[in-house]
Amino acid sequence: KTRRIALIPGDGIGVEVATSARAVLAALDARHDLGIRIDEFDWSCQRYLDTGALMPPDGLETLRQYDAVLLGAVGWAGVPDHVSLWGLLIPIRRAFSQYVNLRPVRSFAGVTSPLADADNRPIDLVIVRENNEGEYSEVGGRFGRGGPGETAIQEAVFTRRGISRIADYALELASGRDRRVTSATKSNGLVHSMPFWDEVVRERADLRPEVELVEEHVDALAAKLVLRPESFDVIVASNLFGDILSDLAAAVTGSIGIAPSANLDPTGENPSMFEPVHGSAPDIAGKGLANPVGMLWSVVLMLEHLDAGEPAARLMDAIEASLRDPATRTADVGGTASTEQVTAAVLDLLAAD
Ligand code: NAI
Ligand code: MG
Image (cartoon, rainbow, N blue to C red; front, side, top):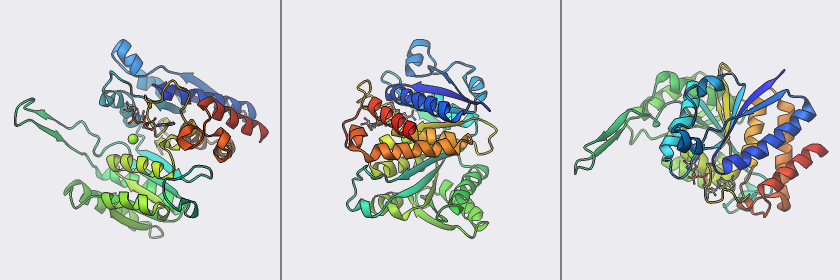
């Protein structure tokens, strides 16, 4: 069996953590005979500056031939962030119906949470973010540019199909965990979209009585994620709410540098995409300071998705062990190690395994 992976390092520290992922995948492939074939694509803001496009016109067709896409991060000075997002990430997520953005968040021994008393209340939650519709939409426009009445209208698009399938995914996931789904809403302020969201989520939850559904306004939910993060199991949220909550949840456990994500087409008809939650981090790019854990944990999610559960578990063990040791932690998690040193430590742990 071969497993074909399209690797898009992207910009900034995306390139640095992609190097780490490549080394780890090569080691796992040699050890477990996974048939991994990696092709690398230079699609990035640099490519945009050189050619006027982040990816070639047939980019999506090219990716379609792969079993998975692994992405570092895109975003760089000189290219507005909405151009880089809509020029690469969002087209991939939508063309391949990657409607689930899965973002697991948990505590690790050795990673200090900014919360007091965090050691006594381990965090272990998953954010299921709707990834294909919602607030991230091109519907709307800017009117009366520069004039005193200038107005911007940004529409959100919610569909019954879109809400149903993300709710079903979250409910199914929760039924194998602590059987609790918290749905992020804001039906007091958003009078069309969120009451609809609530209604459809409730309908789907009624079909799974074994899972408890809790509805929380997203502002109160954000506060509770800071005050009692250990109380959550699965959180289901719209595109924008899920985006915000997942950075928050990751920061509460210690660092955004360790957070992974999977953009999944659960039907398996299209390739899914795996990427760390963090961006290209221009402030630390080129210095060897990037924490590769968010990327390597994304590789774990990718291997699980590609039916390689055993090597995925070995890699997760190695990541955990590297985080326990202060000598093999990067600065964002209280260490002094470089990206390369963390990678070397993970490779050693895998070899000793
Ligand atoms: P960012 O995640 O790149 O950085 C936020 C802060 O976290 C910075 O201080 C950075 O140094 C730190 N940080 C992030 N990842 C880290 C890691 N692995 N190790 C250690 N420290 C880490 O977010 P920011 O600054 O808002 O965005 C920078 C660029 O990245 C922008 O162009 C943005 O559009 C893009 N971006 C791309 C994403 C993607 O490709 N999926 C996601 C988020 C942002
Ligand atoms: Mg984000």
